[in-house]
Length: 183
Image 1 (cartoon, helix red, strand yellow):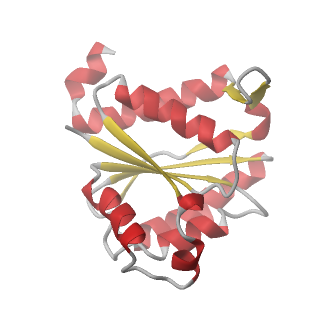
Image 2 (cartoon, helix red, strand yellow; image 1 turned 120 degrees about the vertical axis):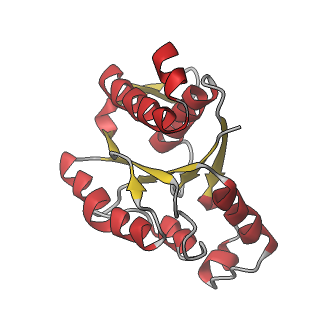
């Protein structure tokens, strides 16, 4: 079975990125793809701060990435960059952890200018980790998320859902071209 790891670099909850990653996870699973969401904010802070690559928790989470067939890296954009907690975790991934895996960068930010953070900050780090197949990034504006008072979360605007759906289809196509034609 195909497995996709979805990494959330958001330091807080509820958040727009969580809505995005849950949406992606649900759509991958409707195509028979197993997903696992990793919340970096829930990793032990002392392991991240002191770069404890051998801690049981970091080793377990790293193994999820190593075993995945593809990886989604998600982050909110703060001050024109991806989050520090995501960088702290990416520094703990083994060299080559993303080798031969399609990687889909996903970000949420307050202005379209923040889109450049994916291209000039995140993608180079992912390349150093061995990501040679970087899927087309998906960037969502804060305004493309509508607060859902009944659930306490967010709803995603249709235009962003369409781009996320295209990203799901592109990734699925890498694993099963027949499934793409059936959807």
